Image (cartoon, rainbow, N blue to C red; front, side, top):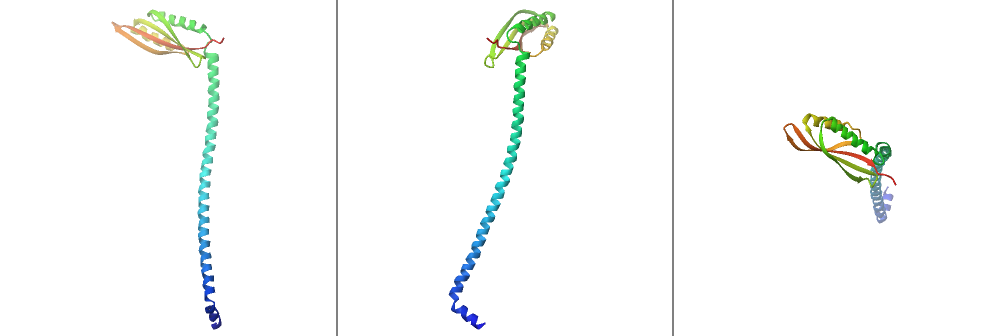
Length: 186
């Protein structure tokens, strides 16, 4: 054993250098291992975030598919509306005007004139027609008039009722009735 101790003491610089290299190697191993552990944890975090984003993207894609099918359905309904509900031209407008005159007479309303305003909408595909009817009559007759006008089927509706005077149970008002018609194709 003395021989070994003598040998180590004679070569102590070598063993000190060897020991220092061993300690440095162990420290390097721990630092490199901790760096790899940090990289592993970071990559696990990135994978979780990516997984969440992929799941959200799939949900959004499913929602986009639903929205696209809703848009297609809405476009079909709009085409059907233009083809079936709206008359191209004015044939139904004269029928509507006749019906309004019948409702006015049925409800014993005094009316002086009926006027029309036409406003093009939807880039020439659709006309908005406002029919202004100035009426005078009793309160009960006026209520019946409004009720009967509301029963005219779509695309006709009462847009506004402006009461100008009420005196002795008689009402003077202007009723604006709105309808839509398709633009005449040339």
